[in-house]
Amino acid sequence: MSHLNWLAIVAAAVSAFVLGGIWYGPLFKNLWCREAGIDPNAAPKSHPAKTFGVAFVAALIAAYGFAMLLHLMNTGPELWKTVHAGLMVGFFSVAMSFGINYAFAGRSLKLWLIDAGYHILQFALYGLILGLWH
Image (tube, rainbow, N blue to C red; front, side, top):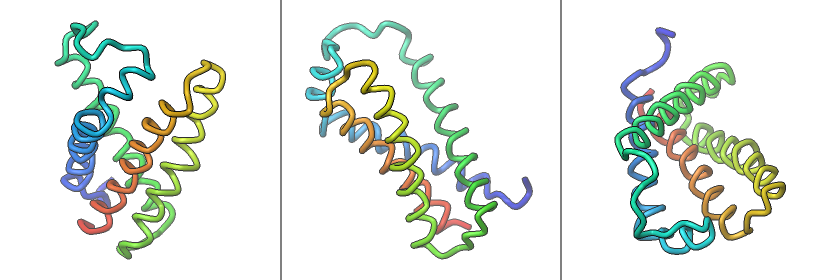
């Protein structure tokens, strides 16, 4: 684990929050809430600190796992390779897994496009940060 840049991993996890704040805020909040059947003005079901804490830990674990994958793939510091790997993981693994779940749950294509799009960009950002900060 000494070969991993922990500051870059933490920065990648933080980038997921910045992206999420924009993505699920001004860009898609109302559409996402409508498609998810959530009242955007309703009080949260759990304390926001718990929600954000769990989300950050999950983002940190995902960034760590992606950094390990990049190391195992021996992608090297070439930026296009790390961003490409992020796009591939985001689309082929995360987005398609969501697609399976959303199909069985009867969720809308719009909701899948919003959520899948976020995760594709999340992993592309991970690739960008980890590729730049190696």
